[in-house]
Length: 220
Image (tube, rainbow, N blue to C red):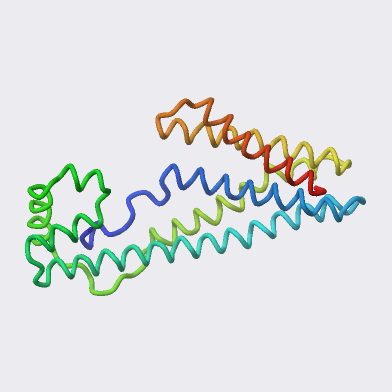
């Protein structure tokens, strides 16, 4: 629960969100280019690949950005309702239960009734929140960041189609680039989580490889 001045999300996108958005965009583009290769085998294939992959990720980037804003609005509305319930006559036990709802289970358990009561009293001393939830500049910055991450993750995959005339070779090289980027993404996620970095990279790249093999087996 946050007060007016603290209601915006601190980071526009946290590291996990940034990396997973890149992974999402990559997988969408890799799946789409692999599928469309079934229907394109002439000189127009490269152009078709690029337009289709970029168009696909533009659409999904827009949808993901809208979902980002919707999630922020829903979460904010829920917190306001809980905060209003806390201030409007909830007794100590009910107030502690409300606070426990918005805390991770481990934190609520560790805090215990005394910690939750302290939080309840501190929250009651804070200025009231607005009655209705709204979206701020940081929310739209976050949505724009989501959109750009999904869309820009496509570009490394379309570079082979720009530089090469052979469609089949361009497809394989594009898939290889995708695997390398997936490995880097898995490495970064593992480092953020405190896990073994090379294992995270291998697992993420292997997951992508399985998806690519499935696409090729289906005719991609």
